[in-house]
Length: 385
Ligand code: FAD
Ligand code: NA
Image 1: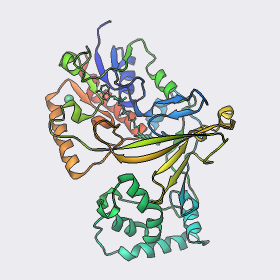
Image 2: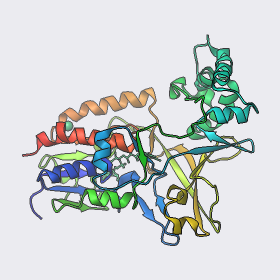
Image 3: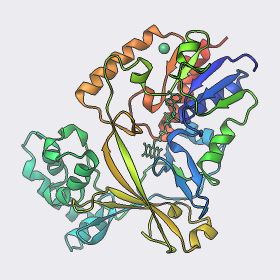
């Protein structure tokens, strides 16, 4: 092997973006990942039996209003004209999401105009106008009124958190967007779409550079391997995108996450849900939502029209140590602990911490890429000779 200027721990979008930038600037980069594939949580594969693109760690929809990020990603992939829409099943009926004029009129069996619907929601929310919300229930009612909150938010949130909303902090929901038009386009960003030939082809093109070497199935904390924390200590600059608590041996305790379990079903039907995402917002369905992957790519007509489909039901729960960490729980205690770990980074001048695990935060893909482009300029490049 030639000399290595930079080691990157994690082949997710943060690590891949920094690697791409460094390689383009002439540096030799070595990426390691404990998983057997690149792409981190945005990785997808084409199912052998059906040819359907399956997003292994849950549905990923690309969207951004950041021109720099959009220009950057378009260097490596084109995007389909997919537009994300979500429906919800409640009490034996299907409603459009997020809550909009269509949802409201269907729910109240009415034909309200935007002004009438807004007046109604304000009146219903007004019940809690002078109440300081003590928990998520109060907060939800204060934001959109009891009928809509209890139908569409309460039980869904309880399933996501495995906790009665009366025991959840009000701060989890700062706002509940209600639209007083029939627009049910889920994202409001300037750009939206899915990578034309799949997520993984996009990521492969990012690192298609002789200056980049990738070693998979390699754990940074496995001291028996060459590119481990124990063996590298200080010798080469490192970009670390794994969990920040793990880096410091969890010496201040663990940061807490939620995870998602997926239950796969295969059907001999052209279409099972009739849409990519169906939320189940009532308590009697144990999962939060179902994903029908082929419906993300209706332009792949041969795959889309075959009489075979894959559906995943999503069950949300608290992550234990061996689970994939997905969403930071972010209690006050977690935030305090994260701040303490963050302060420990100062003792590691040759290491740049980044990404969602390094930052103990939820980032969409475009935010991850943006922060990686900034980290490259401001933190990583100055470390390289
Ligand atoms: P990751 O993708 O997690 O990559 C980190 C990598 O580090 C992993 O591959 C991991 O294996 C590796 N690693 C960790 N520890 C070690 C170690 N000890 N040694 C070696 N390697 C290690 N974003 C959107 O824009 N749209 C969406 O629709 C969307 N949906 C999402 C749905 C779910 C369920 C989740 C969890 C996230 C979703 N996201 C979505 C966010 C998106 O996944 C992230 O923005 C992106 O994956 C973050 O990239 P990253 O590099 O920071 O982290
Ligand atoms: Na540092």
